[in-house]
Image 1: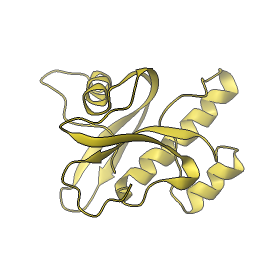
Image 2: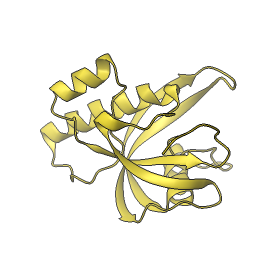
Image 3: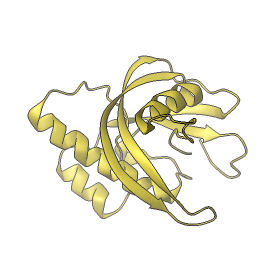
Image 4: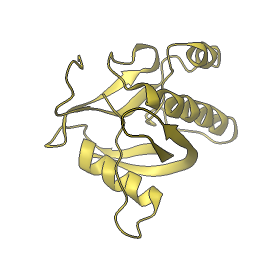
Length: 148
């Protein structure tokens, strides 16, 4: 399972890349709700990933040639096989959503919120975010061993 994402087209802003890639990979139309941090991914292909928090505005999650399944998951029940470098991204999104709730209403259907199953998850549960659902986890074609 992965979050939607990809490379920007020539000259494309990161925010527009997020909107396009989410639509292409999930069938969900989103608006960018905020910029998150740049996360450093290590492992087989080390790189830096700029990330944004998005809010779903339309569409039905559906798989395609890039993703065989798209689902919403409760924060406290993320799927087995979620790649570990996404956990800090998800934790940052939770904190940003919680901060935004203090200053402005956020629709309950807003996507991208989850914990890391460890310290950050316990901290998020203490903030009352234990049942926030996350949109945009996709099951990629070719991922071996990922369970649904």
